[in-house]
Structures are given as C-alpha cells and as structure tokens.
Length: 397
Image (tube, rainbow, N blue to C red; front, top):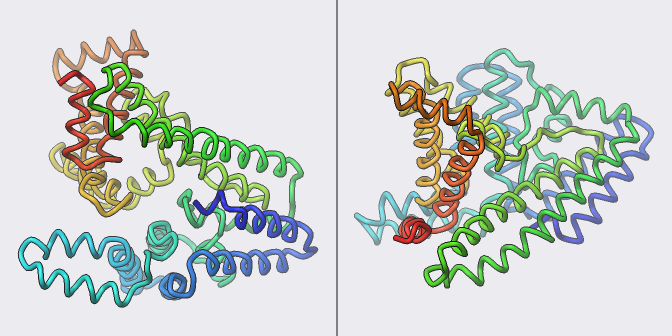
C-alpha cells in the first residue's frame, strides 16, 4: 500500500516542511499543487493521469458554466469513466460472456488495448467527488473558480488513494485557512493520527492478515469457538486496515493545517444497522445517502419504494468496493438488514417486544448488530458459495 512506502513518508515530510516554511499563501498553494501532481505522476504514471486530467478539465468548466446540460454530461462522463476503467471486464464477462464468448473476448481485448494496466489511481474517489461537486453546484453551490484550488480539491494527495471522500464546501475554506495561518497544535494532532494509523495497519491488520490467511484453508476443521474467533479477526482486520489508512490520510492533512472528514467512529459499538452505517466508512455512506438514495426518492414514496431505493443504494455501495458479485451480495445483505432494522418496530406485538428488550438490555442490541455485521464480512471477502458455507459452519451446520 502506498501509505506504508518509504517514498510516501519521505515525500510527506518534505511537502509538509516546505509548505509551512514558504512565506506567502499563494506560494504555499502553488507548491502544494505541484506536490500533488508529482505524487499522482509517481504512483499513477502518464497513462493513469491522462483520464483524470481530462475529467478534471471537463468538471471544472462544467461547474463554471452551471448549465444543467453541461453538469449532467460531465457527471455522466465521470460515471462512465468509473464504469469503464473499473468494471468493463466484469460487465463484459457477465453481460456478453454467457451468450457470446468469442465476442466477449474480442471486446475485452479492445478494452485492454486502450486502458492502462490498472484502473487510474483513485478513480472511485475522483468519480464520486466530481459527481458531488457538480450536483452541489447545480443546486446552488458556488463553483470553485480558481483552477489551482480546484486542482487541489481534485488531487489532494493525502486523500487521493483511500479517502475520505471530501465535500468541496468544507475542503476549500479549510485549504484557504491553512495557507494563511497555522496552529502549532496541528503538528501534535497530525503526528498522533499518523502514528495511530501505522499501528492499526502495520502492527495489527498486517499480523492479523497473516494468521487469517494461514487459518482460512482449515476453517472447516476448526472448533466452532475458533471459527468465531476467526470471524472476529476478519472484522478486526478490515477495521484496522481501512481506518488505519484513513487515520494516516487525516493525519498528513492535519500536518498541513487541513481537516478532512472522519471516516470511522467506533463502528463495532453500534447497537443497530443504522447506527453502524453512521459509524462505518462515514464519508461513503453519506455520499450514497445524499447522491443515490435521496435522489431516487428516499423514503418519500411509500414503503415498497423506500425498500427498493435502499436495496439499490446498498447494491451500488457494495459494487463500489470492487467488480464482483460477492460485493453486490454484501451490499444487498446490509440493505436488507437496514430495512428490517429500521422497520421492525412498526410490526404489532413483535416490534413492541423487541423495542422494549433492546431498550432494557442494550448489550443484546449490540451483540445482534455485531453478529450481523461480522457474518456479512464473509460475503465481502469470499465468493458467495464459500461465504454461505462458512456462515453455516459458524453455527455447526
């Protein structure tokens, strides 16, 4: 991972030091913009940078125009770029492969010939942030007129790889403030978050990963208690891994004097599925809510429509993590869980009973929520048939 390379550490130290030493705000922003371009070029390469630069230019001018057609076209282009670079082979394999294998191979070869060896660095974050920006501008937000500030919003290097997903109305004022003033407390805060992130990622997540990889092939032969220990380790690994990256990103930004949004808030203390999604990958869940669920109609058109909107939003949330059906299944699993969690209280007698139990015994609600979440990680990490088999073995089936 990029954050744990010596190059990233040395680069971050150099950029933060020079940024703080430069005497003028305009020089600081200019230097930071140059640093972000160098970072992107180093890890993405020319082939990976080209599509992102094209999207940046289109998004910038569409936002300036504030015209409905231009903004919608630019949003569609960002979504198309995300689908093409990240999902084209999955789409071809699933939509064309079963009916015309030869055509599918030809289409895949053509797609492979016009794209870099891997999807452009951070394409998921670029697409989501550009869609957010254009949507907000179309709904009355002031566009970013300064091209340097738009570039910094687009390719701010601490959040480029693993988020959090930024909102431009919060980021731009923080960026401007950081270029003018600096609080010495930011240094301690930033270093603490970075150290926390490295401990989570390198010390905890990486070591858990070694044990999980060694244990998983023997899962069926383990005792039921050890299978649950394995599942808890899987849940701890993804939290420590992902929140560790977020901590490092937030910490480096803090060294620059910029506050990025929090991404995790003790999610394994959640007492309901709603509570979990208010604590887990917060920037993504809020994005899905604001730019998928609510535009689809949210909960404004009756229960069947609300359920359909929630399932579609969570299916997209799952697919965002990667081009595979088990991610979609994980998203639908959480969408269904959220539907049940948010609606069970309306069921006569049963709803009243469980509402009283959870109010009187909050540990019961906590335990049920975490069992649901932990079992869901099987769908996230393993093919669907393997995940279902392992889930059954957790209960001795």
